Amino acid sequence: MKNFGITLKQLMAKRNISARKLAQDLRLPSKTVQEWVGKGSRMPRDPDALKQLAKYMDVSVHYLLYGEEDPKSIIGELLEKAEIMTGLFEITVKKISKKGGKLE
Image (cartoon, rainbow, N blue to C red):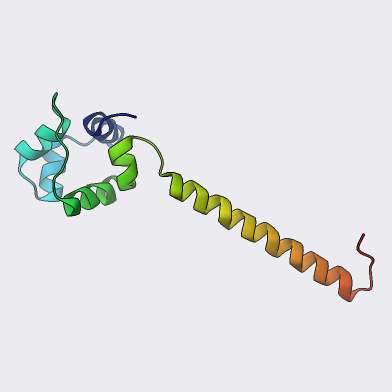
């Protein structure tokens, strides 16, 4: 698990965003953003600021905090795929049944 400051630095580097630009875009004091990415790397105290930052960086809050994908979203994707596969199976079974084919 990475710390918040490292994750934020990596996201900023990937998007070529400076601390100053991030502060301007999110309407935050530059000092606040510098504290987030500095050596001691503090985290946002305000949950709304954290959500705003996650939205700006196009990542989940979980990713910002832990540096990894949110396990809930992975489980959700798996369930969604399972539902699609179940639906396709049901459609196939109905088509075979209507045509008088045998199901073994």
